[in-house]
Length: 342
Image (cartoon, rainbow, N blue to C red):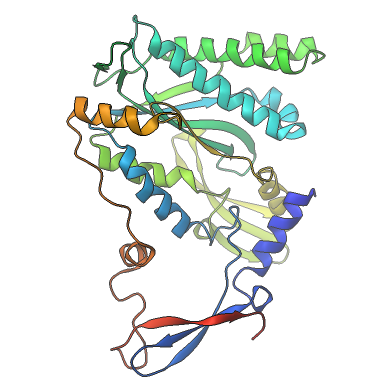
């Protein structure tokens, strides 16, 4: 294991245990106290992403525009997997660059849209069976801002030709790969040039609200969530997975514990690597100015203020999530300082 994998393993093992310390929650009515163990907050931990996901989703609401949105997925041939695993940061960055430039350049072409769309791109590295499978999920506005500052709407049922997307993405990625690694095996490149690269576009969302809930399913997901694990024992782990190759059937898979852990660790990202990126209208430079114009052009209401943490927790867990179980009248508040041992 490398350093990032060792740290992720240790954090997940220690999450919500006395090792990471604890804090006291006190009822503001009856004084009842309970001890809560601290979470690890590692982005690869299955239990620590729910609040981060809700906070991110709430922040992204201000980027929503009154326009259709499309979901585009870019994948690479499995022959490139060893290169990805050997140079993760570089290869993931090339994947982001090739996918985003493909969409932006095709959308800029008047033949297709003639405008700049807004793009949110998310890196995933796993398939349903936990094998290594790097790919990009991309949510793209079904329209964009033209050079003369007007809003151009795409077809409601059609975004960009998949064959054109696939061919351009293949050529762009392999050109970037050759430029970055001039000594790369030519036979590997020849194999990749001959293959059809899988790029697909899903039907548009009905409304902007569904875009946010849909994004939440992808942004802070880890390789496998706790509810997918069905059983553990006798050195085996059984989990459920969806077999897309056979009619989306739900199946069970049992692996040796060591193999299960090995597959999970394939998806630990390099430290500091940003797996969610924004392009086009959503790129950071002059973003607020562009979005203000796009809201006017698309009749999008002004975004609401971001919710404070307690309001987010209430939306996630219900109105009485911190109600005292003893008196059923008071609510818990935390007492400083947090302490390291219980």
